[in-house]
Length: 224
Picture (cartoon, rainbow, N blue to C red):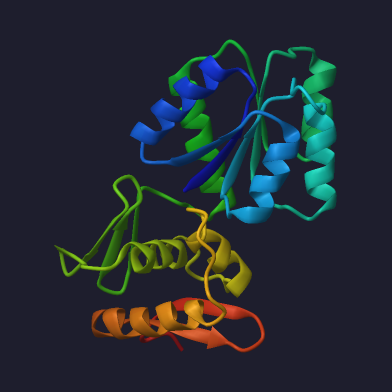
């Protein structure tokens, strides 16, 4: 799971990145709303943690902008604003959860896990499809109980498809996920990685189906 942390307090942000990274999440920090919007255009995220007191834009205004742009990923507000009116406004503007600072790290992790379960259909730290198993904490993928030898980008692609299993994933989202290190992909690179990955996972009762005009869908081989 990729998390975008929008928080301008450097000490708090460093602590959260360290804690959540140790729990198996990939966390990218943004200290302003402008930079957060840039990251959302350049990379693919699964969850947003949003502070409301940003230096360049009010967090609620940013939240409204993201929802108007049809950015539907779950958003957890993390703020010192503790008035009930602020909480109601945050939820009404599209937040999925609202936490008050100061807070306990353990509570944040539990709420984050609950949010992911609600929004990603029972998501847990292990995902099984066919004879493949993904450990989302270690990012390791096993086939028949043995680690599957893949290149870093093949592994990132398969992890993404497993997390999104049952959903069609468009090429733009795949490009964003595989380009998160800043290296642009060639036009035909996604097809190359998909082709390679199909061959690697076919023996394990899993296939990647091309949905013409939409993207790719990971399925069990016996899917009707």
